[in-house]
Amino acid sequence: MNKQNFKFSVILSTFFGIGFFPKAPGTFATLIALILYWFLSPMLTDLNIYAILASSIVLFVFFSIVASYAERILGKDPGCIVIDEVFGYFLSVIFLPRNITIAIAAFIIFRLLDIFKPFPINKSQELKDGWGVMVDDVIAGMFTFVIIKIVLELNII
Image 1: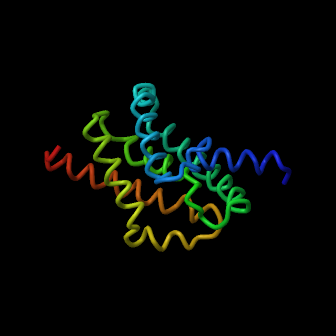
Image 2: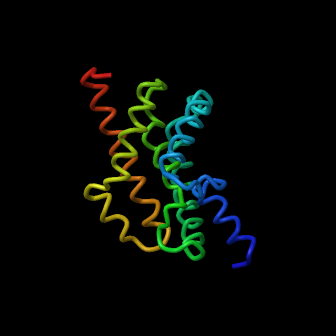
């Protein structure tokens, strides 16, 4: 692997440097993801569910590989790798109604799950390389989605 590929992996895995913020880079990256989601979601409504699922799978594999290369430079699952937070947040809201209350609630729930890592989120980090980096946030995103769906079904928000 050449130097450019390693540089690319660090730039992308830190979400263009956001991961190097001195305080709470994961939270800040998730906030940026919320903002991106808010502005991109009107365009995403035109995509069908199969296109979103296929794109998500491809991005998951790609980001896992990128995170693996970045770990070789930055160490095992360093806090500066934040592409997993961005991806996980998008998973948590992509199939939900576009609503600012939902977007903020998903932000809070996702961050809490990502910070405290209840089972099985904590166990997923044992996966090798970038897979462990990505999978915990995928699970946190899926849990967030389920929690928000239940709350919506109960008409709480």
